[in-house]
Image 1 (tube, helix red, strand yellow):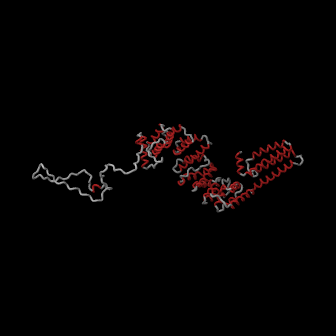
Image 2 (spheres, rainbow, N blue to C red):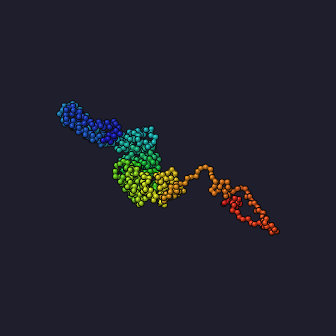
Length: 537
């Protein structure tokens, strides 16, 4: 009932009041005459007509088909009910009431048949289309054209008469095209050639707002080729057009999915859209789509990543809405299924954790040796976040750290540094590239920790203290370092001193006492090397 009254007010307060007056008019007439003439039968008839009016209050406006025929019947019943007990009464108030009921019934019947011919709908469509053509002020963004009063009024008329709106599609102005296509949004029925015209505009028009409006108008198309063509707009370069195509495909998702499946897969696998996030952010996917997305989660990137993000977004909205109480247990079963992609299982575990559905029993089962490494790492991290001294979580981390996988070692290092507070050299908690020197050093420290090394061996070496550069290693202060290529003097070398003269032994003076000089032994002193020996090439 609240929805019916809200929709009535959305259609205009004056029109709603007029509908309400037409509905309660017969009952009020019988009630007043019955009270004035003291006729209980008329009062009972007024109560019966009130019940009929309550049943028709949702049909707004009531003077248009198909509700207008029921309202005419309501007035005929009131007229007969008033005439039967007063058929022999003299002319007076009763006769005036009968005349008024008869006039209103005739007017409603004429309006009903006039509207059935389509003349009134054609007149209204021409009126609103003319106002659009005469409009001089337009919204700053063409995407806001769908909220114009003329467009809202045309959207109600096109269900009966669409020819004036289709005539606007020949106008070259993008604002007129956007307004006309917005009036055709989610039109339920298309005649021959109309859908092809909309599809041609969506393909050829350069304005994103016009393409998005054309895609939204194609939501209710039932032709397989047209649905497949609609799915191709999921790769449009404009995000608004892609969002409109996704929303249009979900309008009748159960019937559209078999024909849109290939287009959806191509959009998820497109490299240029790898960072576009989940594909369907609104609406409910059919069961066949969930099965396909689970299968695509095992493919290569970016198809796998976007399929997983799309699934998680759907499951997150379902858990938040709470309309499916059994969903949590179904997701837990899917998370433990070994045939499902490990990446999807990790995301499912994180989703269950965020909604407090990840029980300790599930965590314990995720640490089994038959589970993939990413699953065990996730479970160990959650255990250590709840209890940093959990021996099971530490044992799982040690086992993962011993694996010959540098990426896994970096992931373990991230857990050790962020959860357990161990300093392993990660900068800003970001993982370095696996083939970098820093990654190799971190992996070495993680392996030392896994093998039980003391904390000092695992802790990274502090960087050098900034300041003046000290003396070179292996030299003392005040001594000359070993000459190298960098410190060779540009001056010519100094000749070595001449050898000492022959020595005279004072104890053995004689004619043969003068000895010949002995050859000099090779010295180990490198304080004065030759130039050739001092250059280390």
